[in-house]
Image (cartoon, rainbow, N blue to C red):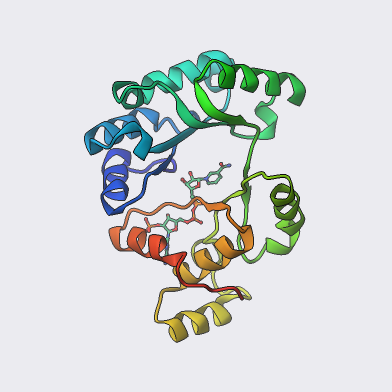
Length: 220
Ligand SMILES: NC(=O)c1ccc[n+]([C@@H]2O[C@H](COP(=O)([O-])OP(=O)(O)OC[C@H]3O[C@@H](n4cnc5c(N)ncnc54)[C@H](OP(=O)(O)O)[C@@H]3O)[C@@H](O)[C@H]2O)c1
């Protein structure tokens, strides 16, 4: 879920086609809507993977922020357990006054059972135009058992079209009878080697396409 969307309807739609990984953020102010959609889905708590991120909104500290987020994601509590599956610091600049101190705060959240996993930023920009710059970070994370999550993966289609990968992506899509966005998502999933692509769409057919993209086996 990004900024400025129609979250409850969009989360409902995503859950209805089979998504269970709900990405929210304090900075985006979409936790309340996500909580409402999760409650309306009537899924069991264990069937949902919900996470949110700290961004020092209104000057709040990490400990009060996670509690505010859990209150807003209240459906999680209604479902029985008040925790998020993953709690991230949204950007390194919010790891104040320094990373070791911020890390201690995350350890406390984890120990208090408010998040199953609490981490510093684990989400990076990955799309074909920047893959070569990110490959070493992905490889480092992979060798240390850290799951990489990619954002803005569809940039070659959405933000920077008519770029260097348009022709091969289009040729692969035609050959496989799929859409260009599916080709890019499958390629990135392969490059992440078990990582997660975080994307968004208001369109049901694209949501279904994203779910199927992992099965394409596109490696180059
Ligand atoms: N630091 C961070 O943690 C961070 C940074 C950036 C983004 N994010 C989050 O990551 C998620 C992904 O955001 P993003 O902008 O980076 O997403 P993206 O995956 O690069 O692109 C998604 C956008 O592409 C459009 N789209 C999808 N397929 C398309 C196609 N075939 N043709 C044209 N448009 C297409 C979608 O619009 P339609 O609704 O029209 O399908 C949607 O607006 C969001 O929830 C965002 O909030 C997090």
